[in-house]
Image (tube, rainbow, N blue to C red; front, side, top):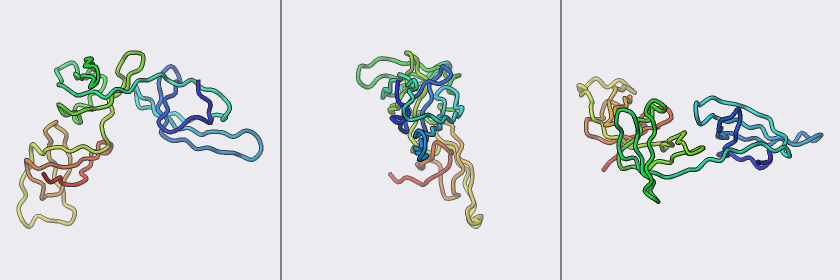
Length: 187
């Protein structure tokens, strides 16, 4: 149990029988009465959003989640396969539970797994990831309208709109929350 006044961004709370991650927290002291914490949470399991107003002295149930840094090994038709970097335990995550994650997972890279009640419920990918452009159409010189873009496909199958000067084989930095091109990466 955790008091409303001790809740901070990143805390996991148990609501409606499932874990929610606190994404925003605002402390409010009205002058008269009790101070409150306004909390906006996102479900780790299904992404739904929940807002609560909790008196700072009231206790709420916090979710007991483990965060483990694991190396992504490979994927087969049914599962993503990870290995714990510390004790070499193996974790399998069903592809059907997180189908959109396949575009961000790169073999040999480490990711943080959120584990609740012995089951992986989330794979945290970095905010920005470097990808190699696997497929790209060439453009003709003179096609340069200000801000013109084209679609490219990365080595993981992710389609991103990039400026016309990006070529096949180049590395690009992509924002994983919006799937938007950030910049070209040299080297």
